[in-house]
Length: 352
Image (cartoon, rainbow, N blue to C red):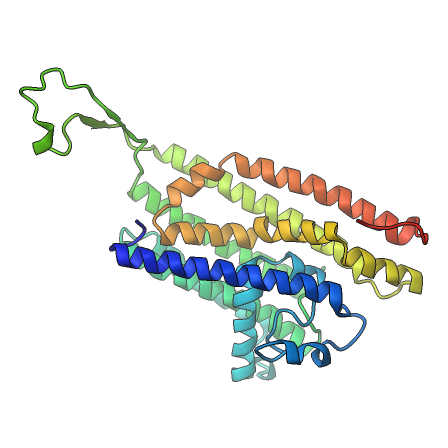
């Protein structure tokens, strides 16, 4: 039960199932698009995919495939980013000179603060409004990047490492995440979860009629202390920080390896082969599940379903193990791709 009525719960579960099917379909389409169509650096993809899509190639997340787009979480890549592109297409934001990407970044911090205020509320309905506001913040986060790329005529998702906008966007994302965690902290401190309950044996059953008192024979353990709440939220925040640091590192490394233009023809073929390899797809897909945005969306779903404490308990330690394993796999794969393309290329070498 995640809502005030069983009907609401069924509708919510049904919507989540449909969303899962949509993400699965889009992942499958993206995989075959990478295998069967030229990647971004080879040709203009708009002439290749217009007939394959239900909507314009300007909005489709499948047209311009890049390293970053492969490593984006499902919600951002398949929902929020197309919505941001559509909003810009309708409103023409990138044509309005006085609206800069950095202004959009600063504005979505204010939206995040308003969202955190709602999430700190005792009312579940208000917290759900806060979830909606934070999703709006996430769409604005996609919008600032889209506007910046549109003004520079850059196609597809990419990170301009070292630019002012890159650091401003990262700072604003961090402030928004901190605001969200503070909202969760305030809510859990005001509504501390209980540790559980134990069933007591009734000593004189003739005197104690459990059928008339639903609380008879049950004693609740003490409430979780603020220290434990802070500890679990700190663990979650540390995982988001670790995920963000590693994710941005591997985007930068893979972009340099697979999207570098100043290469020989043989190295360019190696880039394409590595880009299309099943191992590259696997590593990128795992980062879709464990990048910082995916962590935030998991927390937002937990807030919406009133299961924040359960999520924090579930990922407290196992999240670090999963992230460290993924970092080790990514590190080894980066070294393998680097050796394959730039060090030991030969006709007999293949990337599996």
